[in-house]
Length: 255
Image (cartoon, rainbow, N blue to C red; front, top):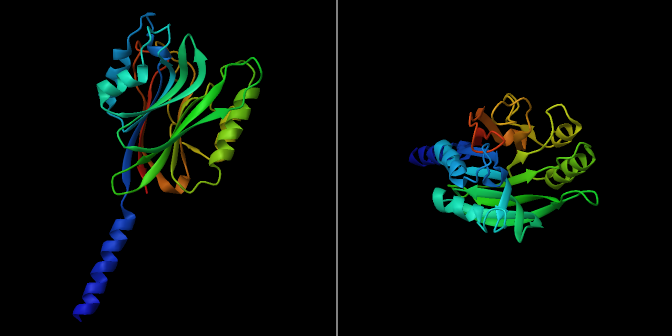
């Protein structure tokens, strides 16, 4: 009888462990190289948004790294110093003596990273996605992606970039969060391509650009595979000055 009881307890403990979820709070923010709506460089304003929202993972776009434009500031390193987070910079291109691209801040240790060069037509601004694997409490992990799709009037490059990202993650079994400025409206072909793989965790949120009086939604947080995630909260942060985009925050649970 005692042996049967012991087996029941072990089974119950195992089932409880399997059912545990990991809460993850995600912020995406196009920071306009730290230049605010008053045309003043103010990286502290960006840091204040991050500190106030207290995310676990942050996807940043339009990040300068030691460029002349921003007085050789390593913007991601400075934000990490203020917030106490791990970093990964994904350079899209050389610019003004330094680099320009996207960045990641993470409260979780980063175990691997890569920069995925996205397709773009000759003469157009290069684009890339920063991809990291982070180690969560309890020995689980997820992939986190920051990207900034093409801003041109024609959707050709954005569609190609969306297809490249969808193809890259199509067969993944590891939970993925992709976030960024997609420069595309919710009903666009680009979003339809991404939604073949990802679920838009920010689908019910309003416009994000321009920051002072937003009229269109360009900034998104998406998740895959769908069955591994529950969306528990999503909102656009009402920050009107720190950048020309408003930040987007989602609260998620990973199963």
